[in-house]
Image (tube, rainbow, N blue to C red; front, side, top):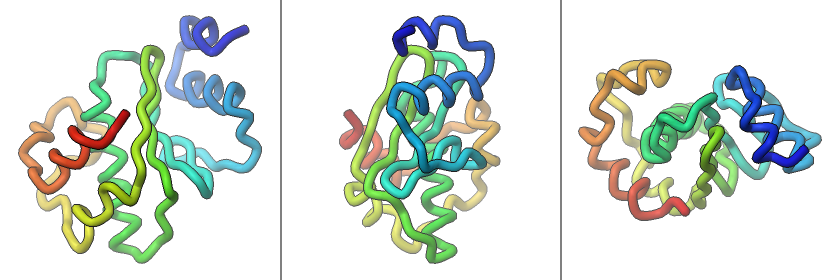
Length: 132
């Protein structure tokens, strides 16, 4: 099957992750809070095309911010994937905007639909101008 065909038959976010892992041939990865994590790239995945790339990147950048605050290594690329679209951005393009900033008062990322994410100006500009 093709990625397109596989994505038409997904029933969960795990199915989306598995489809992309298979087509990309990923062999060294972990799945967890960051949906798919490799040394080179972190992915945020959704099981439907209803979420904007902007919203998904905002969620992923929440995890990047947390990792930065803990002194953890950030991969060179960040990506968002769902059943209809995928987008990628260079981490280096957004790291300066995240340096020593915090998502003060942010709902947990799982509640992404409930928060006006554009109210965080230090991340809006890099997301809206740097993903492809």
